[in-house]
Length: 115
Length: 113
Image 1 (cartoon, each protein chain N blue to C red):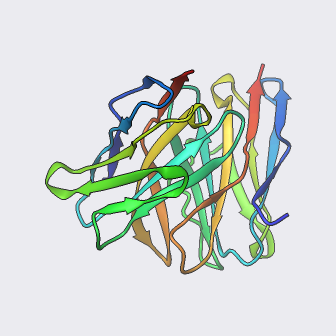
Image 2: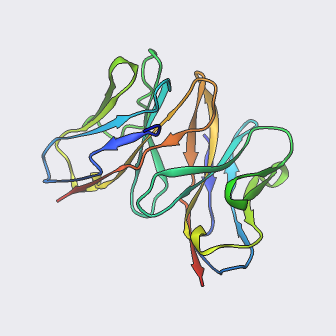
């Protein structure tokens, strides 16, 4: 069975500082990996995804993530955090099913940004 | 609107009552998912509809939970005889046949007193 671990429940960074959110997955085949962001009271928005090819993927809002197969990781990074980035971030792994993909989510990392 | 919509946005009910939560997916999307998000937890998969195929109900936590999707579009998640542990945010997502991106609705916050 697939699983996702986000080791950090809550991270606080200062505005302008760099950010790295950790994600480790367990999956028996080549994974499809996603990062979603959830702002308070909102649904989830896709930040970026990895299916194949270049292991460094760029997403929206200046985020990027790197797939490292040897470490079973897909960490999310941003070089300079903005106050508006305060939200909860979810890593997810997908598996193939009948034309679409079921996702298994981590428990999320809540990001707080200090002005 | 072009996004996934859910109603109601908030629902407060008494223990033992039945509730129905509605999801309107993006027009043309063939796949629809329901998830449950409890406080401090990630998203828990509940059920998945794909076109006219039989739904994948493997995530439903008990037989009090059921869902249907009429005409391949709107879906209703029903919880019978609600319990306090059913309190959570219920999220719906949809995706098209050849896309791997799930588009999420804003969710329904269910509170069972």
